[in-house]
Image 1 (cartoon, rainbow, N blue to C red):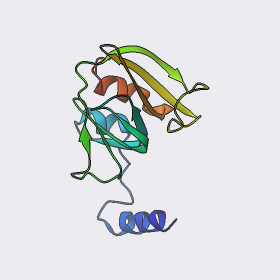
Image 2 (tube, rainbow, N blue to C red; image 1 turned 60 degrees about the vertical axis):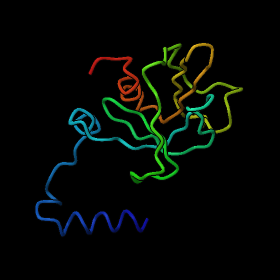
Image 3 (spheres, one colour; image 1 turned 180 degrees about the vertical axis):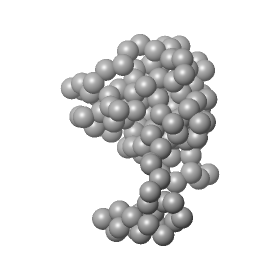
Amino acid sequence: MLDEIIGVVVAALTPGGAGERTQTHEQIFKAGRVLVFEGCVIGPRPYCRPEAAFLHLSLTALAISPVRETSALARHLPVGGLGLVEVRKWREGDPAAIKKHWDVVECRDGEDTVLIGFELFYTQYVRRALQLDEV
């Protein structure tokens, strides 16, 4: 709640801040900037981060971090070798770190399964960061 109040105050005090339209996720993503949202990656090393954390993704990269802010704690994931198996909703039996209301991108790296869980409205951006869709 305090974060929301501070955000409103900062927007009001920033020249043009209160009147400017907020950029959409699509605009941010296409501009090459990083989207950050809650998610998790389940799989063998170097993918594994078996607890909910924050996914940082751009047109060309996917990283996972225990904190929302960009920091040295973010670990970039090798996305070039991943092959898409399916995009799906949470299923019974998925690891506990994947929340029931999340989407899951299931991939393979050779014989290894990699699950990437996140809120459903980020699916198109995760697919693009994994180079599974055109921009």
